[in-house]
Length: 407
Image (cartoon, rainbow, N blue to C red; front, side, top):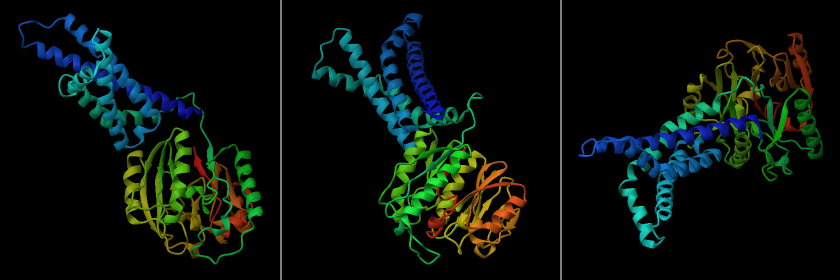
């Protein structure tokens, strides 16, 4: 279990406890206020009696919400609402049933019917409070707690990778002529790529293989990570959409909070370039305007500004440009629609020299098929780790496409 999973456990406990306590307190306050209008003055005895009556109900509500949060119910508002409704119904029913039978009432169909009837009576308020809180305040609190990092938690450097499919040669090709793929060489190149990440201090985590999904090795297209939040993409190439669930499971296992692009929006991770707090998004064949709008709405609360960039000469934005650690955007000008959109742009002399994976503040990973571009970047003071990915470049892939980096 990773440290981020620890944050998920803590967030699950905190949210389940807070929702259950608030609902419990709401019932005490309600009965207390209700007694003010009676001939019997409210007292500590009433508070204790109400608290005892709802104690088991609140315990069950806590348990249901805790389990739901761990398995990801708070990642989306509608699954949080479902979890809240389940807890709102199940906890009062089970709690009241246990309380009744332990008090001497025989277990029978009549008792069960009477217990369910309380959902329209005394337990109705409790159910409403739990369902409403879970889908609103509860989900908000879960996201806040889960995103908090302890000062004792080390900086993470995790790279998700996915082994090439056996039918890699059938991958989609859009802007270049198809070439024969050497599958055995591709496997060796992928192994070397993963080894390079590991040697640079990155923990590599394999996404479950998708042996019949030809493009699945290009795992970057399936999600984009913004700190502790991951946005699950929805590719404009429908044949690639089945790749996303495997990536989603791997990101969930790392404890990231998940958001997603929904149809009719489309977006590929290869179209998203992060430079500081600016997020450049390529509008091209795989990413549409609605996908960009959705991404903007998702990351604006995280402090990012989305800038849309036209892409007509390459498969993805990051086929044409990427960025060095200092924020300088580098690219092969014949593939770039508009250079002026970038604050700082540096042209490189080779098409395969556009892509860099930032390994650290002074080290980048580049393709060995672009020696002039490598020399240019080295001359800027960076250490360049070179890898041969020629078989993947035949499928419009680059060094960024083969991993999702989580920092």
